[in-house]
Length: 106
Image (cartoon, rainbow, N blue to C red; front, side):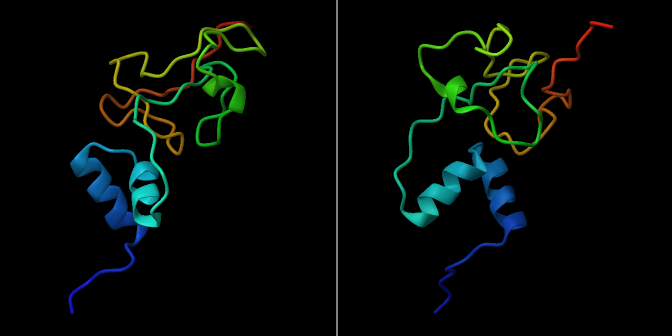
């Protein structure tokens, strides 16, 4: 009695925010999947399309630069330095600034 076997998305997101953990981490725990230590996720601020998945090559531990454009890979917000924990969102939850680097080439 009183056991919850499934959480809706909004509740799961609230718990993730409260714990300071990415939603993907909690989903893996719920499913009983193995979980890797969280150190932020890496992305190319120029090539990555916010709200979408990243290129697998960016997760290569040895990679420091994007193989498509040569831009240095990031794992934190350019504005406040907070680690990027999920690619589901376009803006930093701490400072509200966009993760996407605005190109100044015209």
